[in-house]
Image 1 (spheres, rainbow, N blue to C red):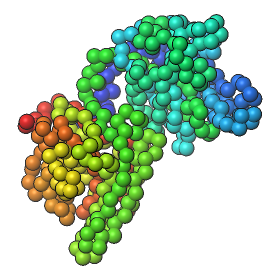
Image 2: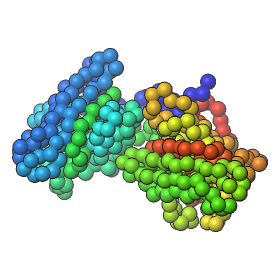
Image 3: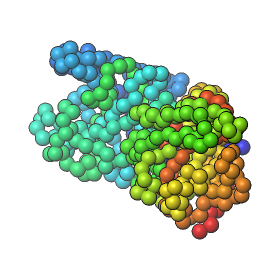
Image 4: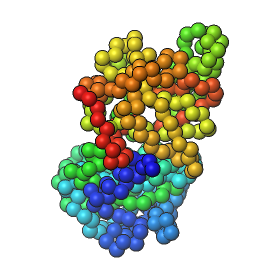
Length: 404
């Protein structure tokens, strides 16, 4: 039985985190929440918080509306224990950041939010309190969103200030936490489902279990473009568009008339390969891609180049593997793990099938220069969305060895 990486991590990572707020009835972490909407200048934004006991979730539902006087979107906040109130929260000083397990449940709801922390020491005047804030981008999938302490900045009424103490000195004194819609952001409805908020231990297993290679949340940013079969009168077409939290890759793989066989398309990271920066992933067991296949196209492949492959040969000498995406019953993103032994740089240029097994070595994995997702060897329309590519440990106890 195959165990998904995300399921494995969910069961293990809890042991390495400190719960701050949950909605499961646990006395120590069931905290009071109160919505706070834009109260000034005639703000009209609204939100409510409800507890779904059956699913053990907090459901924060609302709509950001235009403030008439400002002719700009307002905001909605969700605070614990509430506006102007304080409470005791765990000492977070031994942790490396915060984990928000949540999703955007509305099909067209807002996705950009922020996490908020307030402390005893971030006060300049009796009524001027600093708020440590960091951005948070949700997806339709219920998943963990990690925010490092270094990503937080202090602000007052949305304006950054420099007088707040370093957050690292305040982690023992957190007395209020909150979530907010991104400001200045967009007007629109939202339904955030929140499962938990916890801190991540500095020595966590999770920090050693994966390495971001490509993400769209600012942690491992890379631009993408698409290329199509340029030879023999190829007629395939594709586009790749980077959205707020994922890349949208779609098009049509068509028959090449001269070859009477399907052509190909590629979504690839931009930048001159020798200058593109990717992390050393030699300590991991393979690549995990968070994908959503819209339709039933199955001709996807995952590939990468390294510094030993020159710029001209990168496209046709990359290490390539089949990217097999299981059917999804709920249409959400799912993690697909591809181990290093499934990759080879020996493959047929017409079909992408391996002609010999030659997996990447540790030297290769230390010098990746480009990430590619292909459609190949199958005619038809395709539509794939992907949130990230991460190098990760195998989602099972099996040991995968890569020779140096």
